[in-house]
Length: 113
Image (cartoon, rainbow, N blue to C red; front, side, top):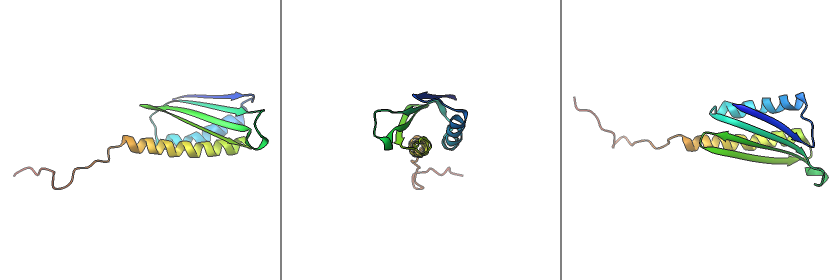
């Protein structure tokens, strides 16, 4: 799994990097077929004060790219909300991949003995 954490108008500190990694463990625990993860943390100067910290993530899994973004006044809170959204989308993607169509008992052939 390739992981890229970058900042825009922001220096990514080791504490911030470690926080993102611990939050990503929850997502990779649900779905282990992740190929590539790109995290972008941004401080926007032009936005209103309460929504100027933004976190966005692109997760490349087998068959699809999942993109999530979240803004908040606190970057750590934005990362928390981002991981909640990402977790829901990854679980939904995993459910779609699994085959939920089972044959009924009537249609199953019983071998003759």
